[in-house]
Amino acid sequence: MCYSPPSMKSLIAFEATARLGSMTAAADEERATQPTISQRIRALEETLGVPLFDRQGGRLTLTPLGESFYREIAPSLNTIREACERVIHQGARPSPCVSIAAGAGFTHLCLLPLLPALKQAFPTLTFKLVTVDRADDPELQAADVAIRFGPYIPQEEGVLLASEAVFPVCSPDYAQAHGVKGALTTSQLSRLALLHQDIKDPRWLDWAQWCQQAGMSLTTPRDEVFAYHNYALLLNAALAHQGVALGWSPLVKEYLASGQLVALSPCVTRDDYGYWLSVKHHRSAVIAPVSDWLITAVG
Image (cartoon, rainbow, N blue to C red; front, side, top):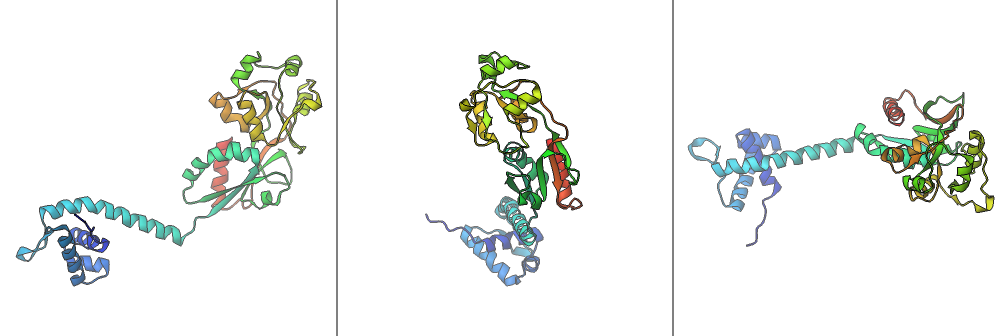
């Protein structure tokens, strides 16, 4: 048996008539004529093969089957109406887009995990994450929200998201296999595989600078150093039990919390170094709540 479903217009005419109690009222709501509504309902009844209204006695009442049918389709038609209204409303008012610029490590390890919660907190906004490699990158200056790593700059109106705290990290398996826990000594450090990053930015500490700050000496020959191209690759190597990496606290926080990495010591800090958040329009009713949310979430 080949079944042809009823038209949407006939379903809408039936639902409106059943809900409002008359074809005239349904015609007014649907901006149609009463004969048109009547024809659509007749067509629906012919398609279904059953009467939906009792037209005897001058009154229009639902038959038992009509009443049951109405209860089943009314919620679905209401859902369709609401969905259409939302699309029309959203189409009439494009969602404001907020751009957030930060370094590759911070974007990958901090902002991306926070993005679902950020979208849930601000459902009427869209967000664009911009990865920047340099502190003087024009995109950092142009972003609605800019997150910069480095020292405090007096002329910039920035809020400190997180102070710099740098310490060795490795996988629990690597720590157990090499018998390291807590504070590292120079002797222990010389026996470990130190994971290096190809850093050409003076803002970031490398192993030699970290050891100098920590009062330790580094004895790894330069020709034995393999440098990873970016910080995400470096951490992946640490997660894969390949050695010890330097960890900046905001970037490794989730890995430490999940137990995928363990923190060793000492911890090196530098005065006025950290992650600084600034906004292009600090009084914007759109940007200010996003900025406040990020400060709370990262801090």
